[in-house]
Image (cartoon, rainbow over all chains, first blue to last red; front, side, top):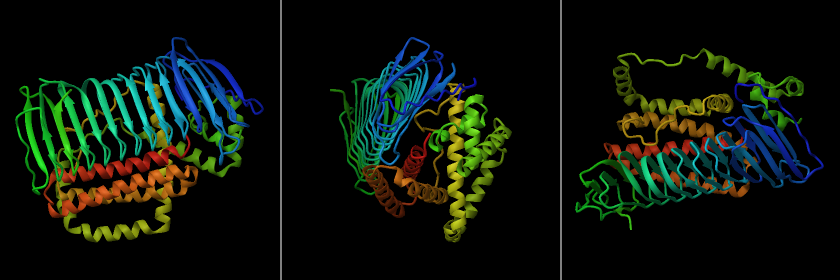
Length: 286
Length: 228
């Protein structure tokens, strides 16, 4: 991990339930954290140090080690078949690249401006702040992001994705989970679900590109009045409601679906909306 | 250090980033553990092969003409090929080899991916929208070829996942199966619609996107259940 050699320090704490450790890590160093059950809370701070405080599950062992460019910490469960919750609270250099992996443990990150790679099976992911890059993936956990990462990717299957903020490059994907995006200016955005509903309320950069795809979820897009945008909307069987412009949808190929091509305020941001049988609504922000 | 702990260190061991005090116990374990030894050999092989790869490859000027000709040729052979491929993939030794390949590539790929991103946190990332950049099959014939690839990938990943299922909580398995079922229903509906309207490019693209989601969900789940 990283170019520099890692000094690995195993720190078994078999008999202890509390853990507190500090190691130096460069302001732009990399840190990996693995904790399957319980919680991982990460705070960014302006020190070239990683500090961790935690409460280990009974019999669990905590390992932490690394060098100035890269470090890792993880918890070895005393019983893999029935792991007990371990709660870790970690302070990292704000510009560090942080990688976290859990099974059911929740992940809560704040004030990290470096890169974030967050993976969980069923835990919830909560990010506050403006990481430079953010990749958050869950299988059935919810993902909640409050901030403005320039580059963001979030994926869940049955979990909900809620994004409040702005981004120049955003992509969100679920199977049945709803996706709710609410915030400032977006440039390139892609949202896709299979049955999950999509709600987008934000400002579109005039030169931006936006893709919304669903099979049977509903799509609701709300943009401020006089936003220059060019919409291309098509469904195979779903209805389209347009209150942004005077253009009416026309019947689709099967007679059940609909199509709508319309420019708003002279055209601008390219917005592509596709639904198999979901309902599509494009409207002004309330 | 236990097997589970040492698994987390194999990538650093192979890349020579473990210091001597940690290297000794890891080396001792590898000498005694067949699984870790195989993982180390695989990682070494992947690293060696990755080092030999060129930075970029320019396609030949007539690549697209050849691809189009191949698609036309394959159009008539798809039905036969499909059956042969199914038989091929059902052979136990082929399936086993594929499972190992996916697992090894996943492990090595993750290690390389993480290392490359650790070295360069600002490495280029793909942009969100696919308008004009993401390849989607242009016709039903091309999609059918792509669909076969999806089905093969799904079968391999599903097999890997079946073996790892015990490491997931029962409620997670239930939700995962529900999600896969949701995707399958969507694929079924879109496939039927495509049969009625084979020239509908939007349907082809949406169906292709739904398959991609299924492969991605299976891949992500298998990676998450494998350890770091």
